[in-house]
Length: 136
Image 1 (cartoon, rainbow, N blue to C red):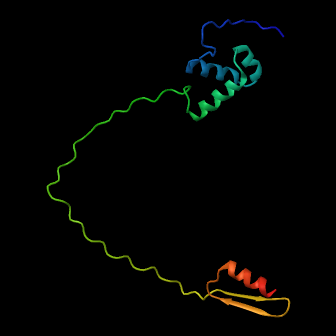
Image 2: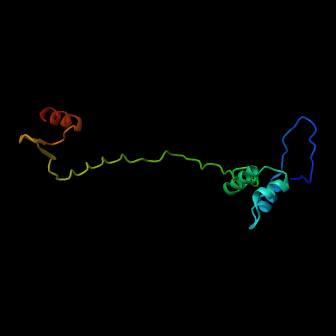
Image 3: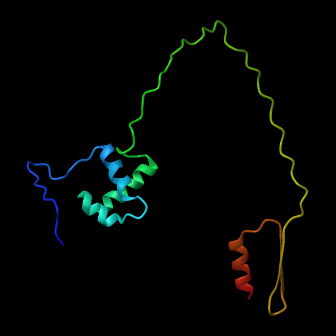
């Protein structure tokens, strides 16, 4: 394998930086139909993981690759002057929710010994398990 280009980096900065336009051009070139990303990355002089990362960031739009947001015009208007405080009616109490006419829960267990255990109303599941365990 022979490299066609040699790039000498001078100075203290080791990483190359690309403008958003350069990143977009490289991603567009690397992900054209029929292009192998690894070959395109080698030809462009970047690692293929960068191309995938730039592409994902362009999809989301959360990177320096996307165009910076523009300013929106804002108009500030003075608050209208209030001479009298508004009259607030006291709220009426909320009606109580209607309780559904349900029968209490009944749990009936017939143990292998023939003994019956019947629990009515709200029962703590931990207590019920302990009672059944003690009787079994």
